[in-house]
Image 1: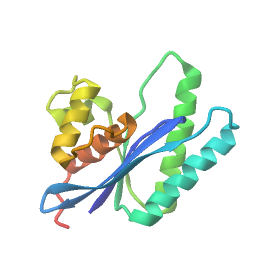
Image 2 (image 1 turned 180 degrees about the vertical axis):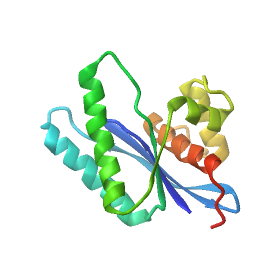
Image 3 (image 1 turned 90 degrees about the horizontal axis):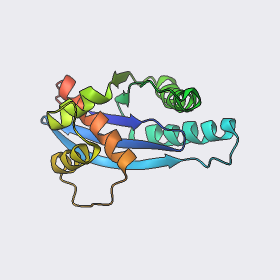
Image 4 (image 1 turned 30 degrees about the vertical axis):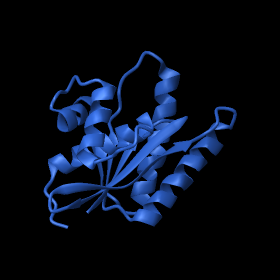
Length: 159
């Protein structure tokens, strides 16, 4: 089963795809969907949606896991994040892909065994679990892979 993990963001949205085989996660792909802050909001959202749609059409994931909302004093940032998340969720809905939401704490717990782990600890464990040799994996993509890995801990897959 192919799982698409999403780390939402309006400027940089991370995505990571893993496939479960014999209860072992295998890396398929990862990347960043970027938008320019000079672009109008609706154009940025269109870029995100179109790129998510391309990823979904290319890799045909059976599930999407996404980081749950967080709360911030900066209302504008939260709204922008919500818009970006909405585009990812719409992409999943349009393709009939179920979406599973996980809190940052649950993701950290699933990947590192510590719900208070640092970003560096999460990134290290993602690389270890997936056998990544490169140090060049972007933080947002690493987070997306962690979110996908979290989903694998919640369900058992045979294919």
